[in-house]
Structures are given as structure tokens and as C-alpha cells.
Length: 263
Image 1 (cartoon, rainbow, N blue to C red):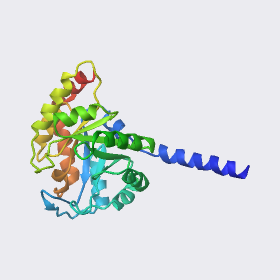
Image 2 (tube, rainbow, N blue to C red; image 1 turned 180 degrees about the vertical axis):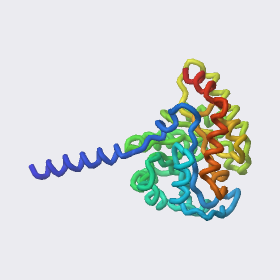
Image 3 (cartoon, rainbow, N blue to C red; image 1 turned 90 degrees about the vertical axis):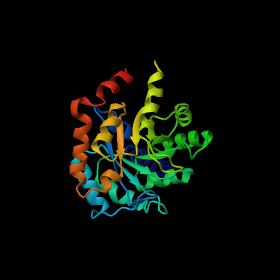
Image 4 (cartoon, helix red, strand yellow; image 1 turned 90 degrees about the horizontal axis):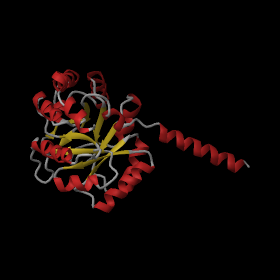
């Protein structure tokens, strides 16, 4: 009898843990174009990013600036990240937190959940199809959402063959780190050609170096834009984020196209 009570209580505790998640999908489903604001310390293409703001201060600035979600880069060797930042930031925000790292093993998914991530990045070019599908299923089973990242048409169709609810179109080629905003434009055209099929939510990633870049991506019809270095390198990230949001919403940028695609 006592043991049964203990097990029931543990089941209740686990259910509460799973419920205590903030939804990236919900954040991307609101009218307009959502901004995922990134926290990172370095990148292979830019080296160490000098900033006077600590992660918690930057998080506060992003919230005040109107971010819909937060991306935290945790890779240690190449991005100088720290998975511990997830634990630091989670109690300081009500926004969903996306963990950006190179996920190759289910153990990383459990770690992400334990440290406080709400969603994880799964990169199609890194994972074979079977492993991609298995990682998606495992993430879902423990209460994590996933953003499946693609860079070309082949990866896009691979992602569409899974149960992914959120796609990320990376404008940066991870082989040589070159950037082409036309990647989002071209792959959104492919998605539009799939008439009669409901598409996943789409986030444009990488390559935003101006408000005009963000507006261009919004006009491609994406649901969200992940902005990294353009925000991280700004001494006034709150104001810069507001400028981006004003730019993508001016004249309803992207809104008509999104409505047409999801009809």
C-alpha cells in the first residue's frame, strides 16, 4: 500500500515536470513574425564576441525588447557555450528556451530537459534519417519540442518525411560558413508548391545583419526569425530588437504570405 502511494506520487511529480514546459510552437503561432533572440559567446565565423552584458542581463533586455523565445548556444569547444546557462536562465524568464547544440545522442535530450530547455535543435545534415526520427520521438516522449534544421531541398524533404512541427531554414552553410539569405526564399517556394498540405512552422536562421535582412526574411513568409550575432554584438540589444520587430511588422511584412500559406 505504501509503495503504491509512493509510485503514484512520483507519477504525479513527473507529470508536473512535463507540464512545466513553455511551447516554442505556441510562441511561433501568434500573428506576425516572432523573433527568437540568441545568447552566445562566440562562433567559428566571428570568434569571441565581446559584450558587456552577462547572459541574465541580455535575457532581460531581450524580454523587454519583445522576443518571443530565447535561443541559448551551449557548445563548449567551438562556441564557448555552457549548458549550465540553461539552468541559470530558466527561472529568470517565462519565454520558451531553445537549446542550440549539436545533438547526436538521446543522452543530450535528457540533459536538455533536466537543465531547463523547452526545445532542442536537431540538424538534419548531422543525423541520418533513422536517427533523426528517433531523436524527434525521444524528445517528444520526454516533453521537449524540436526545431529540425535544414539547409537545402534534400534536407527539407527529409524533414518533411518526419513528424517535425517546426523547421529551421539555416541560411548559413555549415561546411564553409558562407551565408545566403536566398536559401530561405528558395525553400519557402518549395513549401508553397506543396499545395493542399499543411506545412510545419518555419524559422529562418542565420544571416541577419540588418533590419532590412530581417524584413526580407519576413516577406518570404516565415513564422519566426532567429537572430544571433546582430543582437549579441549590439551594445543596446533591447533597442535593436525593437527596431527589428518594427521592421518586420511595418506594412504587415510577411503577414499576408503566411496567411495564404496556412490557409
